[in-house]
Image 1 (cartoon, rainbow, N blue to C red):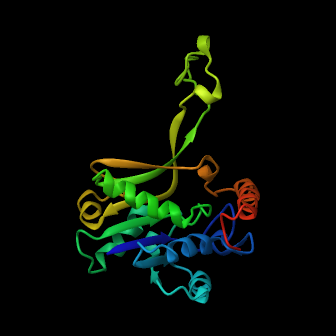
Image 2 (image 1 turned 120 degrees about the vertical axis):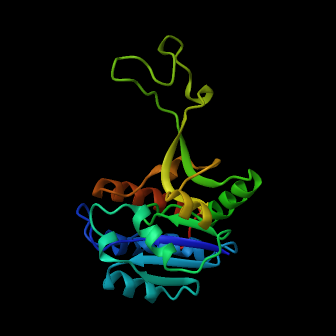
Length: 228
């Protein structure tokens, strides 16, 4: 069985109720739920929340695979880690150790169904223990001591000739139930990487991220990437 898990809280200091704030015509959390719902590889989707407003909105979508899980208050505060609610949830279920677990972030609304499906294929083909998503950034980085980190400034490469670096974008992660219980972490063992398009780098945390993400979303909507 393949399980998807999206943790969402009531509290958000930067953008109040951001998980259900309207984003391109739909509540923010809708976009990942739709992409997961449309994946033939995902069996069940769980939204973990401490918020009655979020629960009502999510149930109102009518997605057949989606179930709301009431997360404990101690794992829904400002200092709670994602791992804490993930482990709480798993401990209360009867999943098999070899079940696959997708940890999905609602703040990455540009993720598409194809990303989930292709990442799963990568995970299986590489016989990995876990997987994370990244985007390739072709920026030049420097150390604080004034030395270049990832290029030779004396032989500055052209962008098209520069491999760049892979940056974790936090869109989603894949692991097995057994690995998560054993290692208490979303990642473990042999880690595979699924590279997403560069425009999917954004993770909505501040209002400026929101403004930029909506513009990117609209751009790719018009090209048929999404259904609004």
